Amino acid sequence: MKRSFSWSDSITSSILGPSRRCRPALLILGFVSSLMSACTTPPQIPPYFETLERSPSKRIPISTVLVRDQRIAYLDVGTGPPVILIHGFGGSMWQWEHQQHDLSQHFRILTLDLPGSGLSDKPDIDYLPDQMLDFCVGFMDALHIEKATLVGNSMGAGLAIGMALTHPSRVDKLVLISGLPSYVKEKLTSRSFKQALESRAPSWLVSFGNWFFGGLITAPVLKEIIHDHRLLTPAVLERSNQNRRRPGIIKPLMAVRNALPPWESEFAPRLSSITHPTMIIWGEYDRVFPLAVGEELHQRIQGSTFVKVPNVGHLPQWEQPELVNRSLIAYIHTSP
Image (cartoon, rainbow, N blue to C red; front, side):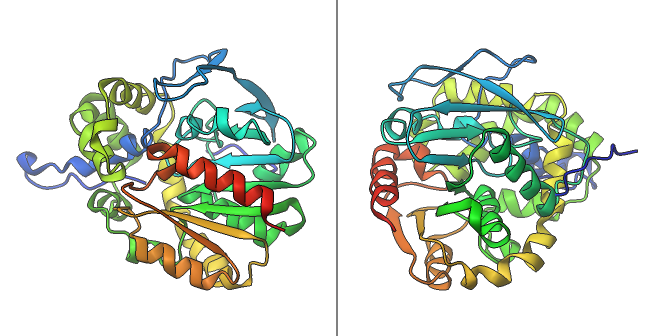
């Protein structure tokens, strides 16, 4: 029986059929938990956030805060106007490892692991949009942040959009990186993501497959998300493998996947009503949501700014951090 919480808010694939045809997509939910910059995550929250070799900032203290009785891990660096970085589905704060140094020279940068992800607690709830939005408000309240610029990647962009539509006074500006469009399933082009979203395999079976066989497809899944495969070093792959084995990670990911219909019904139809200053950043070779999806989102949000990042996939802030960081700094500084 699920625990009751006061705050209200994928990926698997079927393995039924002949054993030799057991599809690797069963394991993908575990791998999307390592989406690119996923982290090395021991059972206890480590004292420091440590980036890989491309970032000039190597060790940042990891803080925790209780939000709706859940322990949330986050980074808090820099001073100035607050900017909250929100990771995508199955991701973690490590997706933003290359933003910490540059952005903190200009802003107060808060980078969190959402509930159910990374180093944060993983409650047994439904992870519905209203629950996640209530959590975001609680996180800002706990840190005494009245209003912030929200920067979201992929499904994290959907959460930022939801905040702008339901709690507009708490949002200063929006930056949407690689997501989240309406008609998500129809616009997905990633074979792995599609298989995972369509599956209804039970969580225990996915957890079993992820633990015992997950290492077999770490690299193939990450190659669908990252365009420049040279960046997928042994250290990145090892970090991803460690992260997907964190206890309790599968059920929240499956719950988030199952919460897509409320997003479609509650927020996607209202994209054109967003009035906040908005910048949309999209990778030229995004294989999850193609560039045309980003251009359509740009057309739906009146007055938005569109930035195409060349030679990157679904995580442009991780593949081309210098270009993305410059765009973020200039936009947040200059937009109304």
